[in-house]
Length: 314
Image (cartoon, rainbow, N blue to C red):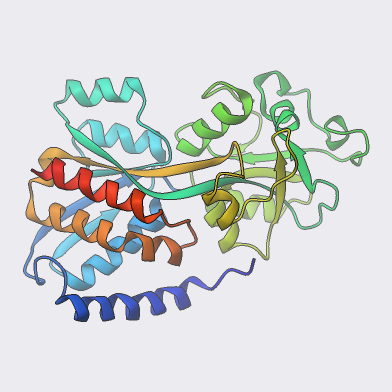
């Protein structure tokens, strides 16, 4: 699948949203709001929230909206201490984070904003790893593999005698948590002798520059870099399936399909600028999600999120 350049997609999206704004009489607030909206967290969800922020600021130029990237775990640390209004997350909030939020009096709402599929990637010069089983991925990434599984031939006898170089998210990443749970069988359990980063662009660059590389991150970052990377099909025991918009959305790409979330603090939601931002987010998210390479939500799922938000505001 060829990725459309983000600048082209953004321009087309701006026209679309402008047309929607004219048809609907503009967005909430009519451009008369001030204040701030602070968002942080998952690098996977970042492109979605950043796209929302950019388009929201066209309508509300006097609202200062910031979107940071400190990983899902790092984002929850800020969110649960009251530093941010919203938190991007590529996994559900953990029990320990729930306790921290409760301790600090932070009430919140979790909303699904998109669907993503974790993708396993190799360098384009890799001609042998077209499909890997979940058992082979577990063999590669389990803690027991550290310092021991270091050659491609150890994965499968017919693979070449070449060093295995691994790239993946850091431990503050929700992608790390989800992958280890789905593949290794326990969240947070992984070998640590790999190049780690919460910034998916760093992982893209690493895999693109290392012909012996294997790594994983969200599908959208593969679509953004399709000419630099090769995607690996995953076989959970029922046959090889390549991640795509269709296989991720219909659940046939398993076990690595997942929902993506934003969390909104109740105190923050009481501020007009934050309420307007979340209203705008839910009204435009499906168009924005598609523009940055993620899978939009089915209509029923989106309607459910809107209902949850309206009840939360009330």
